[in-house]
Each structure stands twice: as structure tokens, then as C-alpha cells.
Image (cartoon, rainbow, N blue to C red):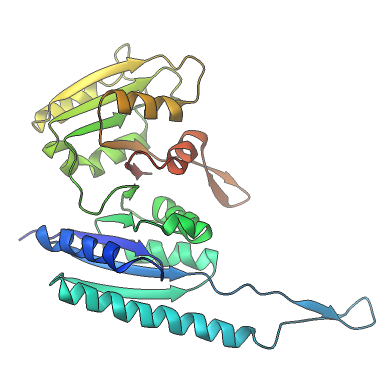
Length: 281
């Protein structure tokens, strides 16, 4: 028996309807739903007291109480989510944490090590800091692909694979193989300005098309001029023209003083909300 484990990242205010829909979809596919409920701690304002240049920093007296309340609220909501999973007869578990940005990255990465894929609940983008740090940790510190904007356990009849012969794009294609094999058509899109050190010669995408064809995929290769425009916007335009329900692409980042930030095309595709995207790094 094969059972996929999906990491489902949510917030305390994620609706019961959203959780139930994810649980029912998981149950229908005999999948395991590993829920991770995240929240940031309350802000930590402080003031400086003292008459000298070496005044002491002091925390508000009620900050610890507010932190305790936030953790208690997360624990209560995690229990409610667990009850929803039980009512849906869905196999799964719920973990929760109220922690700072760096801890969110590490926690997501650690939890994802025993999962097959990661997805986000609708509305998590409203918690910008949680969404950004969770996505960062999953993409750059975990081995699993991540789907943004997509319904958990969705199926897609037409998929657009943004291909540039890079390692990240290849990893994304391998991670998305279960989706690609079940799609009616896979469109491999190659863009002129895609930066890569390893081209497919004069016909980019043909090697990937041959590989996917061996898996029984119906593949079309298309090469697009960038026209000097942002590749991320080009991917969105061409994917919509192809009628794709899912975009598959590699995620890229830049290291700055030990902090990775998303590259331009990756950032563009993360910020858009109209197309589901499967990322791998």
C-alpha cells in the first residue's frame, strides 16, 4: 500500500470549511494529512530606562501573559482541527507552534522531512510573515516540493512545465511526476532568457520531453521569446494560453549575508495568486 503524506500549513484563523475540505480530499485519496498550525508571537516592544548612556532595556510587564495567551489559543485551535480530521475519518495529525521567523523555517523544514509534499491553506498569505518564512524553510531547507495557490490533492488535466535545463527545474519535474503522468497534456515551455549553464543544444526541452514520453505523458514542447519582459509574467501568460491548471518550475534564491532571498522569476510566481504552482529547489 502506498500512502502519500501531505504537509498542510495553516493558521489559527483558517476556517473549518477549509480544513474539512482538505481532510475530505485526503481521505478520498487515502492520504495522510500532517497539519502544522503556525503563528507569530506577539510583538515585543521595549523601552530604555536609565539616566546614563547605558540605560537598561525593559519589556512590557504583560508581554509574557500575551505570549501565553497566544500559545493557549493555538493549542485550542489545534484541538479543534484534530476534531475536524476525526469527523472526516481522515488519517492525520496536528502540530502547532507560536514562534519567531527563523524558528518557523526550521520547524517547517524538520516536519517536511517525513512528508511527500507541502501545501498551504487558503488565507495563509494574510499572515505574510508566517507564509514567507514557511515557504522559505520548505523550499530551501527541506527535500519536498511545495504547491502554492492549489487545492490540496488537486488533479490537473493540463500542466505547464517551465523548463531551463537547470537542476532546480529537473528536480521540480521529478517531484511533479505523479501529476505529470496523470495529466492529459504536458506543455514544456522554454524561454529565451532563462539562465542556465546546461542547455539542451539547439532544441531546449527535447530531452525532458523524451523522458516524460517514456512515462506515458502526452508532451508538447514550445519555445517562447522573452521579448525583454520578465520571465515570470511570460510563464503566467503562456500557461494561461495553454489552458494549464498547474505550473511546475524550479525555485531560485540568492544568498545575501547568509540570508537567502527569492530570485526575480520565483518571486513573481510566488506573489501571483491566479495560477497554482509547484516549486522545487
